[in-house]
Image (cartoon, rainbow, N blue to C red; front, side, top):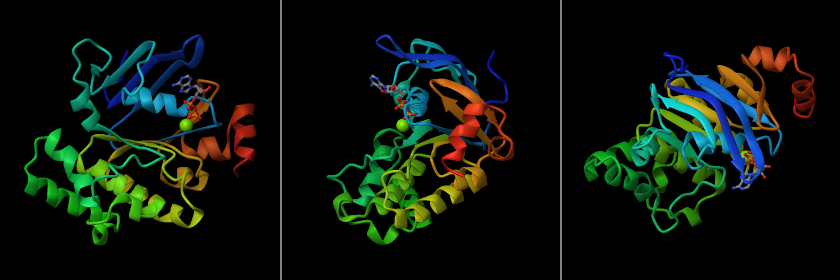
Length: 246
Ligand code: ADP
Ligand code: MG
């Protein structure tokens, strides 16, 4: 049963690639305004889970409910859904042929049907928040990784999403760029946006998360508050994983 308070409610989710079972019986509830962090070793299925939540992958079995509606049901409107549940990728995925401002406008006008002026105002507001408003005419190739990621965040937020997914948003960045991006994400978390993020930045996860999910080999091995997971993990595999980071 979907939890009535949840904005996203995952039930018994399974994903196979061929015969390879990558997600096994995943259940997860995310309430509005919550910041949920997914941690776990490489290959444990974190990206696949996020990609299922955004329907970039088709789950093999199980349920994903968004505001009480099963998004895997027939006739569900995927394009509209993706504007409600946005994604920030490790590799930025900006439109390289468009400048910074256009990157933040195009989805708003084409998917949301906003006027050019309305979209531009929203884009400028979000670019200011991440400190990228001086770069509106720059093309992505002229920016550092950290700057590109801040534009990607502004672009995602410009769509007024209900939920934003982040898949290792700082993993491709030089160390000196990481703090700016984490600061932008922390500011967003404080606006009450619902966020689900995959990260290896454990200090950040401990600081901003309401809930932490530890994945191991395609299952949720342990979950709970940051205090519980980081200070008092119960499972041997959680302890083993955290030893490498803390
Ligand atoms: P993580 O993000 O935790 O590192 P992934 O979700 O990327 O893990 O991958 C989980 C497992 O699924 C890995 O064994 C990976 O090789 C496999 N996998 C991911 N995407 C695909 C795909 N498109 N085709 C086949 N196998 C995949
Ligand atoms: Mg991954």
